Amino acid sequence: MESLKNRDTNTKTEVATATGAAATAAAASATVEAARKNMDFIMKNLLAGGVAGMCSKTAVAPLDRIKILLQAHSVHYKHLGVFSGLKHIVKKESFFALYKGNGAQMVRIFPYAATQFTAFEIYKKYLGKILGPSLPIKHSDKFVAGAGAGVTAVTLTYPLDTIRARLAFQVTGEHRYNGIVHTAVSIFRTEGGTRALYRGFVPTLMGMVPYAGFSFYCFEMLKFVCMKYAPAVTCAPCERNTGGLVLSVPAKLLCGGFAGAVAQSFSYPLDVTRRRMQLAMMNPETAKFGMGMFRTLAIIYKENGVMKGLYRGMSINYLRAIPMVAVSFSTYEVMKQTLNLDTGMKV
Image (cartoon, rainbow, N blue to C red; front, top):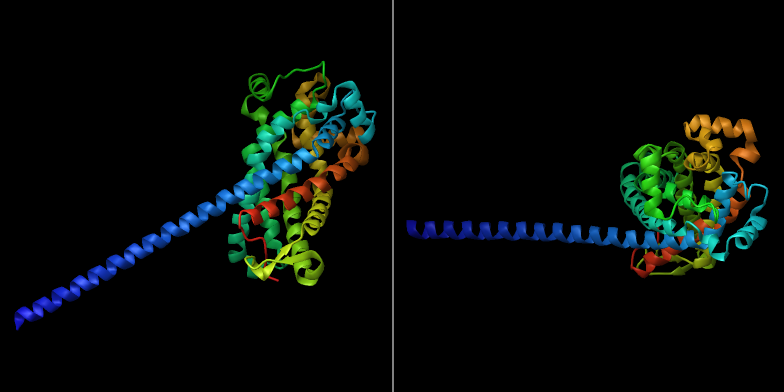
């Protein structure tokens, strides 16, 4: 009798052990699967963001170069306008000079845009859970997530932006730098090491908060309005998306373009300050712009005022920022759809 009881106890113990082992294995399997899905999500977003950044910057590369030349008062171009400046670049240098510095831009923009878009998705996901219900303005977690994503991306890639600006500012026949590596090494050795590569970083960070914040906030808000109030005109059905809708390409472009215009209006003076600081050491007479953000802002304002100084080149900036941001968001969303990621939202 006692033997039967012992056997029954042993059987129950074995069953419990087996059940526990099965539960542990199932939990481990679920954890591995969740990690795999998270990694898949991150890698797809990195690819989509990187491609979006490269497409958007290449689309406006000529406007980007003339903007830099006008912002920093190049002696060869400061007396010209946007379109006359573009013509002069082709005449004085060559057609391909319109894309000078774009190689460095592509090296910078893929990791920059990949990091920015992916960081936005991650920050948005967690901020929506943590802060969403307590925020006073609907969707304002998108502003916080966008600003954080912009700060993250620019911190990681800023030296490449400095290098690209130096290369784009050069005029044929007056070259100081022979490529990305030579530019980086020259700046590092002759201008103060890592600090020189990050010259203009503080105004960039300060400008990035409103720029990236408003870019993402405006795009997400306009996307929400389109999906909620005008789905028949701006959307198409898509069962796999949250809400069952996907924004059409023309609607993506319009939302992105408006978002870019709003964001640039707020952040442009700090963009001018950053450029003057990045390019300060290329000529002895402009070295005064490399002494600090507030001093640079004060000098620009004192010498050139608001419209001809702090907002110099704003017209070209609208011409480049609106299509650039439009192409960026549109390409990102199209890439996400291609990679079977969710581009919808609750409406």
